[in-house]
Length: 632
Image 1 (cartoon, rainbow, N blue to C red):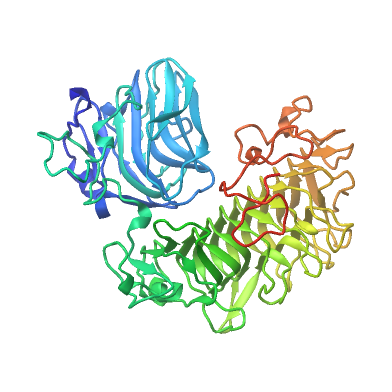
Image 2: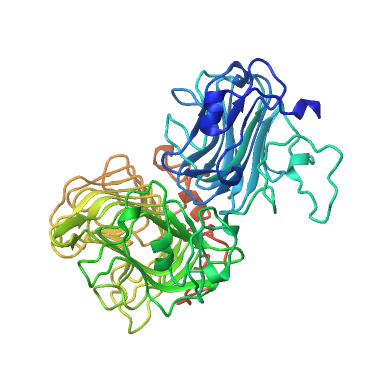
């Protein structure tokens, strides 16, 4: 046990700023430990800019073995790689690191110049503490979650080194920031048996009145109830159907019913930057939740977070309509700097100008409507069937609708920086209900539709059509899966993406790395003049009748049934998901990529094998609010 004892000398400048402690000279492991000094010994990272940096020391030049471990609670699944612990260098191939990639834990070490990675098979649970670790013993790299080995890979040789700093929750080279909480992070210069019982992983029984004769040294934060507090067990404010006097607590605490707020807006009006607002179970759908903007929150660096409270699931906290700004009232400002996660919204989430810095995560919903709002992320959610009552239409035309600009008090705001990531959009056509597409995009600046699934959409997966002369600036549609459209009102239209039908040129659109089911593709119906700066690159396109759109640049696409439009294109007589014989330069959907999770390679119609949240779901629609989409 002596080898695991923490022996450190605090470095005042680092410890005061971040809670880091490191050693001077060769020391027993752990050679470095990060114990945050924030609330309850937990550090919060915002996924955008937060990170903790420790200066390089000779001890951090690991050689023949290593162990990294950390106690983490991710609050959002962000796309790409997100650092937990990383030893940096100025360029690629960091010496070692522990990270999340699209929510899945992985680790890497550079051994003899070779980059070795090990990856888990499933995402870490959101809003739940996990002990994550990686070890290298000179023969194998092993990855662990809560003491269970979740991956391993043979490797041998000496670990590469660098003079770059050690960083927690992000890195200053690539900016891959983690979103959530970290209770501690540690580095050892030997391989530990993570699966073996370790004293600091056990809780003391609450029935004991006499402590052990001598407790082992520990760096983990403690509270009066549990050494690692559950993210949703304490909050600054609580919302319940009964409500109360809506009292804010400066330090997060457990629920006191008499201090509950009766609505989201009441809590928003009482909140301060970075507050957590827990939502109690209940049906809130009878009251429209209108979030009214507060100037005091307009400059927040951390949002007000609304999320399901302890024991509350997405199906037990049910809202009807949530508005940040009102489509009917041009003098009402849309509320900014807030996050909503872990609930159901059966009708509409509306985000109007000048709302900004809004995150919608892990929501089961009917419709999203965005107009003039900026810096919005909608991720890891399920949308459909869409609600009859979409703003400005009075009918259910889309699961997701974006208009390009909105005027408030005479000032025009343009929809900017919208990120739509890893959602499911789903709708079966119902006779008598107007529903044209799952997503209707009318324009905007810097919009990304990335790694989503479109299933059972009536006529189109995505319909593009500039509105009121305001077109697209940098619209990227990438890594999405487009299943077969349902047909519906216009049975002749079976295109997953349509470049509009109003005679307006569409420009500045990049469609890349998407996969389309058989008989699905991209069209403009031949009704629009050519646009500029449009490109279709590296897609697998399943519609043999798709015409090459005038003015669009094509390259390195795979086409079904002898149809090509640009250099590097390939055509195939059948539609396997991956066909190595065709040429590797065209296959973006390699095993391990984001979009590859969505299908079974070589299945007849790309059988879906990826389930967003594991909820039970019916074989066919339409479905009730809160249910999940079908698996295939």
